[in-house]
Length: 204
Image (tube, rainbow, N blue to C red; front, side):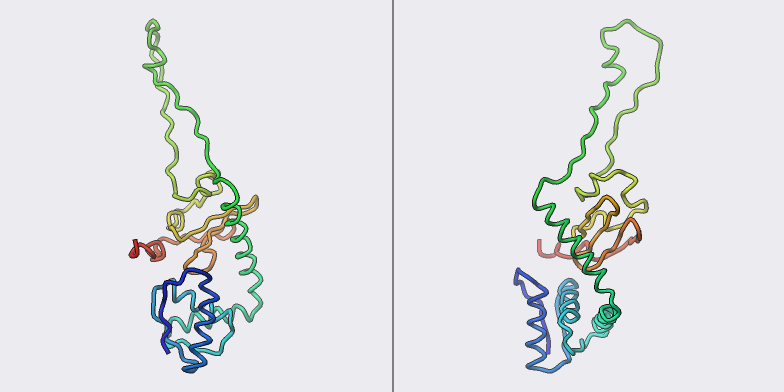
C-alpha cells in the first residue's frame, strides 16, 4: 500500500495516524510512503505515536521509525514531550504579544559635523561609526545578547523551518522538519548543511 502526501491543512500527525490505520486495515502492514521529506517525516512520527505494527518498504524510513520507537521504549519520551511543551509555550508567547525588538543607539555625528562653525582645533581621532550586527532572520536571536547566540555559525540561524525560543536558563532551536531540537546553548550542535531550509520554496 502506498501513502501519498496531500495538501490538507490541519493536524498532520492526526491525519497521518488515520491514514496509516486505514492502509494497514485494507492492505496489510507493509507501507510505501511517497511525498516530500517533510511528509515522510510526519508519517514516521505518526507510526511511532500510533504504535501500529507496520513496516515501511523504504529502508531509510523503516530505520528511522525503529530508532524513534526504541527511543520511546527506553523512556526518553519525557524529554521529547518537555521539548514540545517548551515549543508550544514559545509559539504561544509569539502569538500573544509583540515580537521582541532591539533598540540601537543614535549614531554619533561625524567629526566634520561636530566641528562645523567652530574655529580649527588640534586634529583628533575620528569617532568610529556604529555598525549594527547583521540580522539572522529570527526575531528571538536578534533580541538576545551576543554571548547567548551560537558562537559557531549554524544553518539553523537562517532556516525558515527553525523555531528559536529562549528561557532565562537556555536557548534552543526546534526543527519543524525533523521534529527535534537541533541546537541548544547546553548542547550546541553546529549543523553546516541541511536541505530543510529549501523545503516549501518549490511551492512559492
